[in-house]
Image 1 (spheres, rainbow, N blue to C red):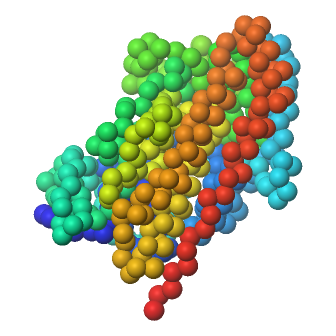
Image 2: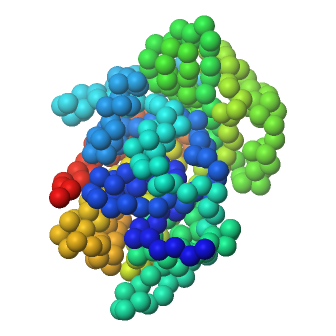
Length: 407
């Protein structure tokens, strides 16, 4: 089977669905290819900051989510070794800015998908290869799928995650291991957890643990720690029960309130994975697009989760792509891919390179070891001076979508 489409988006994660919705809002229908047979729910929950909520408002779905998930006003960072507690306030840096909100990833995906037309997402559609053909002076991307289907597209947007087929085709280097792993899950208390609506983190040596309330009965929790890829790669394939047991043994000296949260984990949500990132110089020296193919979300900018900006940046990508494609479509009656994608990459290149760098440094300062000089850098320099400077990346405004009027 061979079909033709104006825009094809590879991947139905946050970036893919948000981009499809942004394009719908400006009058452009896209086809989303998803290799799974349902919406992906990898990653139990995520935290979205001010920049992400501005993007969700631009997509017209912000109120649907913000009414369910209240913002955090403050958080606490506790040294397990000394018992010292540092309070961090999320509001007050900028007038009118509210704190971050933690929400179920599946809820975000479902909310985005519900806004799309029924036939927008094509499931069980795994991309195998890409090639380009010249057609009357313009390029056409030819996508070959695992089921034998051939799709010709004027524009292709790779939103296919960290191990992106589209990114490989563009010639970007494989994302590197950060030297850290993360264990994550959702804890469920049927009778209620009784904790305040706050973010808490616990530090001990090279291990950092945290929790954030989702509602009265559920909490999102994580543990990140330094390790070599070969040492812990096999753990992620073990049973959830064994992963939970190993984790509890490794953090047995953490506060009981945190251990209890891990014990209450819904094992279906438990994941153990390496933290990957794309090196920033890929953005300086490599092509992030061709005449009609580009990237968004983790396919473009995988980063460590230390500032909680992975999903936020994906939503920013969607708005910027939607704005540039929408302007071209509204002004010319058609999409001019070369100009559009060049403008998109120009706008996003340094923003995401900065996010990757700042996120990595934030994690390094907060987690790297317990020597006296690292404690000094973390407690006297990072939390006192650099944290709020780094955290200002969340006040970025990616803008709005152009107004499309149906005649």
